[in-house]
Length: 467
Image (cartoon, rainbow, N blue to C red; front, top):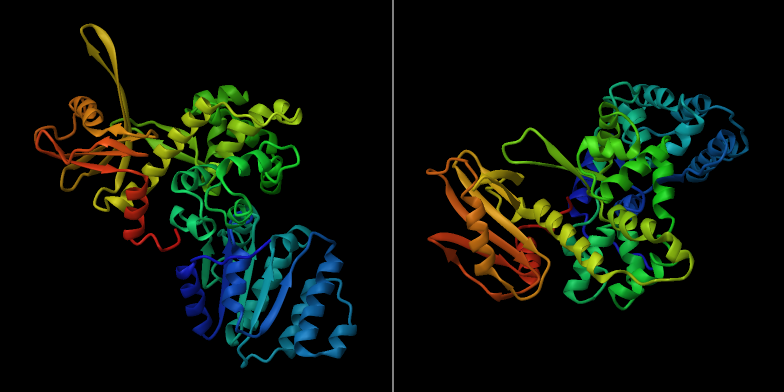
């Protein structure tokens, strides 16, 4: 597969600053295939040092391979002939032979694999850092994909390595603007792709092999031999011991069970027991939480578009896929894109309107003519300090009549009791395209964004940086 390195300018700046220090201990982590290894390779390409990529093998083999990489770098024939059964003697030897005044790096990639076989390794490294590394000019960097192990065994306050790192970088997926760096599909297909696989570089590289969105989905998702057909099983099994519970939770949310009680009932556990699982999924970036205006409650959604798409269209249709049927219900697919479009706007609205930092969703039932009237507004953005409020609607449709949408939106807004006579109010409509646009309604500002304007607006708001 062709390698493409896109953006990551901020992360490279951070690493360069760390390199300029007398010594550094840097931790780079994130989900699989997000580009950690490529980032570090790019950073180290003009620097001298030791690179060791751990494998899931025995402790003895891991120590031998790491030792051989060091011996080769140092041209140490004696070290090459030695055998170590434990990490501590090896690092003790390194303290004697490494020159603390020379500038070079030691990079251990897939570090969690070492901790699986050697729980004592963090303590060994703590002593190595305290006794030697801090007094040296050496740049020490570890990286890994197993988020849970990195967080618990390296970054947490209970870890022997706590307080030793000089910097940690959680590498996140690329933003939408960088999709076009990988492939030249038409704009709508690029949005659809982002709503399907997100900004994972390796996934985008795979999509590069196809002429359009449909051919990519049919070959890689709706195919029992496709790259993504079993991918979630692999990703979840790497991170979680209770994979069945986490799998069930993601299934529940993708099917529309969005409150803790609904999710717990679907999974078959008590509501109070569901929160630690949800918190874990949020910390991994797999699940998100959306708050309601004026309510002390929230709903959960599958934040990671890859998992959301897979559970909706692969997991639910696996019987047909096994039979070789690759057709998707276009109406269901369009509904899915509508949902992802709303999530996309929700996550990016503070970039388009930077003064409106608080985002909520408004769903409330009012009594009208002795009947229940449910008011639902896709997104409400607030600035409580200056009492400014924006009501937004997202329409995954072409040729949208913005005047009609805003007229309905303004009617809904009248039911929102928030500084009603004092607030500064405006509206926004997001759509694939418009048949009619307006700039104001009843003296209030109206913003209209089609896909091209949305992309341009995000780019112009300094979205050239990684998240």
